[in-house]
Length: 186
Ligand code: ADP
Ligand code: 5GP
Image (cartoon, rainbow, N blue to C red; front, side, top):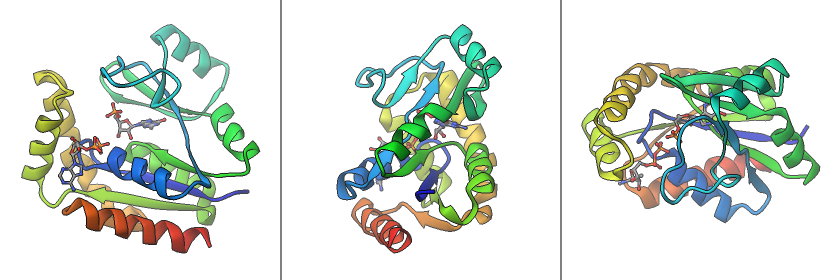
């Protein structure tokens, strides 16, 4: 089994930014593209950040047991990791990197054990997390408050992961993440 990197964090802590960086630095890493029912953000493309699918299609995939794990991360917004996606990356002979919510990350770590490195990205403070989410300008008032509420809860799980990375100065976080991944992949 090839190795897996599981990156998790409360929304807005910076996991997408850090995962993107790791994908640039490590050509042998490949991103697990999840399926989701949420609407694409303006820059997002189907089949790149996510497979954007309808609620009906998501339900059909649940019934067909196409998911390794899935969660209703936010009200009426489903996200899931597809078996076909993990198979695709393994066939490429690469290691796989997941960007996934806290509950999903715990499930995957449980499933893959020592083949997986789980990293929790932590914001320097709750205030900074709120600021980053607002500045990203991807959320409306309702979705912003849902994410902030959930973030508070998710922060209580940090001790359950192999490594905790405090994302304060981005350049330092990039280096720290690179070091963690490098030592795990050797
Ligand atoms: P997540 O994927 O965890 O929801 P993002 O990677 O989208 O988080 O980051 C949330 C916002 O914070 C983005 O606008 C991103 O550019 C910004 N950001 C990420 N890391 C830092 C950092 N270390 N310092 C300042 N801003 C950051
Ligand atoms: P966003 O809407 O900001 O892209 O993602 C919201 C949350 O869903 C993030 O915490 C992200 O990591 C998580 N997520 C993305 N894909 C999956 C997945 O396949 N399974 C689970 N459980 N969570 C996911």
